[in-house]
Image 1 (cartoon, rainbow, N blue to C red):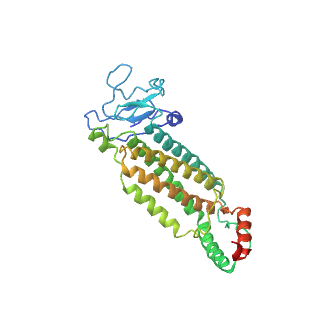
Image 2 (cartoon, helix red, strand yellow):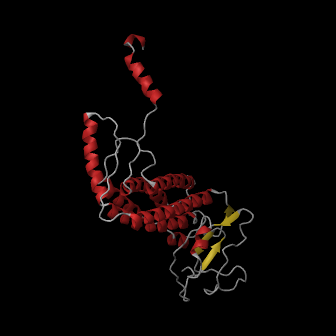
Image 3 (cartoon, rainbow, N blue to C red):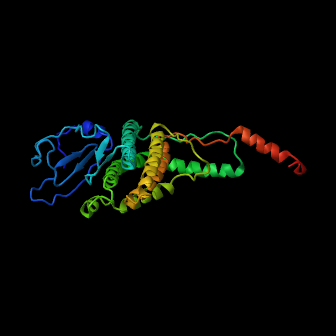
Length: 308
């Protein structure tokens, strides 16, 4: 358990922080907090570094340890490695994603507090010319948009309920990433094993929203209001985190379920951004082809076949 008096702001400012929720098996009944340089973990056998005396839960460790001043840090296994290693690159990206989701939560909370009660809002659509088929699709999409927008508070509450769970799972991902299978005992690996049911949970949330959202007929740009746009930023960070994790997979030092979770999470964030755009009653901006390319294609179509 973490110390209740530790300031949360200080706790979260440390880069690459990851929290291990371990059940204590010792007779003392408590699991002390231990700092491994940039990693904040719970260790059942932790000792105070300064005195090498048994750790006291009444002693508050300093946020800085100075052990990483030369560019190295410790993994959960105790192995010290360079902060430029693939382990810490992945941990840093996951931590950055968690921070961005904190920003998203704040914007979403503001939206909930300012949302006009009992007042219907409608997603604004562009007035560009459409073909007959496009007009039919537009009517179908507008109907789905109205349904999502009229239930905006329900969907917003759902996202706000999902985000803390996802942020907690990202800490679990960090715990797993900081415990390389190649250099960690089986007992440690068992403690940080990532549960695959969290992947299924993301898929259920995605599927439920996909049934309600208009079909994607064009590429969309990051847009849809402040909160939705930040969800798109979070999605791009999630993709970068996944790429960093893939580098670990190629060495075999990875729990495969962590990589699958990160892959699914970016899909969730994309769909959540689409839902949030409707909660904010903002239009999703569609990608438009370059005019020169379009005109060039038209000129080619107009040329006689013999000239091609």
